[in-house]
Length: 315
Image (cartoon, rainbow, N blue to C red; front, side, top):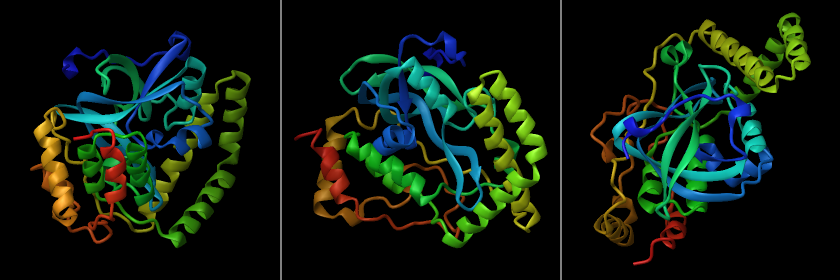
């Protein structure tokens, strides 16, 4: 299945069928994010592979706290493992309103129809959330994803028994620690922005409320807060430009062959510390943040997570 064979289109909420599959590759893989925070209980959740796409982190977030969020871009030599969540169209519309962009802003997540190969062999038409237009702010000022955000991907993949090779790939991705002092400072900045810009956002929110446009309300507030936080970040002297971080692609077809899995398991059983610690060890793509002082280079012990995932793939 090639990327050229996929049909990508952003649809209006009213055009969704009664039940849809959402291909989750980011934080929504974790059950707590989907069921507890977003209050969505999927009808079915099964692992799947999206071929011809690569995992990236180029949706801008909150500087110093959640600098960026997950995204995907087309790459014919890569594949992404994720979770196919079957849900009602109403639940999917709710999912869209809680995501950055809300499906109505081209600089945020937009629903894109793709063909995903489930682990059980089915080819399922699903909607993935894709950022098609990278925000200029993220191109000028960008950092690695937070340790918390990457942890949601790793734990969600282990919970749903994603292939152990892909779990090892997620373990290799670098991240940054969140500082409590910075989080307090950012909270104060958010409250200040909301207060100072109240003459602008209050009439806008009232307008969207009258039109029953919940997605537009969330998107407007999200963009207003994030944009102004990045402006404050630049005014405070953080003028150094960073290149957007793109994780090394997970090679397409890596999990097709039994020999790959057996070699992986043998290496884990002999000495876990011999496994790759950085994304650049998995792919020849260079890591521009290899010398960045805040990068978490040392992987935590993930033997227990790998053992859980391996139960799905007996010898």
